[in-house]
Length: 196
Image 1: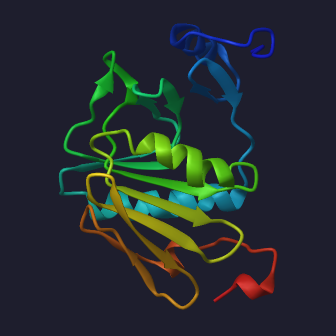
Image 2: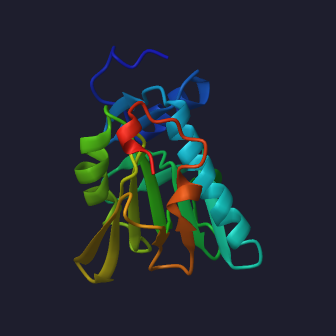
Image 3: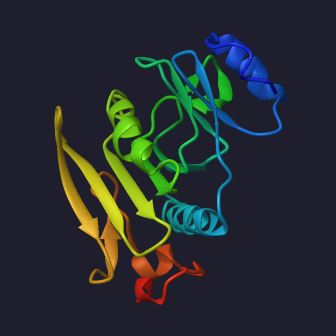
């Protein structure tokens, strides 16, 4: 997939290129950005969180999707692949495509060095334009640290952080709690200082 030949792509061109590509890319208002490689820690954290969510929601009206389901943000003309999304009720599909949804309630991103700034600022700004969106978690993969943003009213968000002093994370928009031990299960940190 060649994405450097042209500066601007329509959403239709992006989707056609994405169908044929060997790797995933995000689309931001005409620009195609290849997703960088993810680490085993990144994958392990996303899998740990989504597994616990899926089990907890087994008999509840919530759905959990991982990074293969694309999110369409129409107000910003963005296609992106969040690491984990929680949908309340049924997914709302864009253009009847079951690989693209528009109604996440919770989005969870595992931070990478290359995407950390974008995930914290750019993506959060874009995600806030989604009417159903109520909660955002940013999980560090290099140490035990999680940032949680919860919607309290229109244009108002509360912030909470978790680190080695905390035992569990409680979501506010859905009834769910997960221990930090479970979030970081089998994650290998480079530094001994990051461990429990």
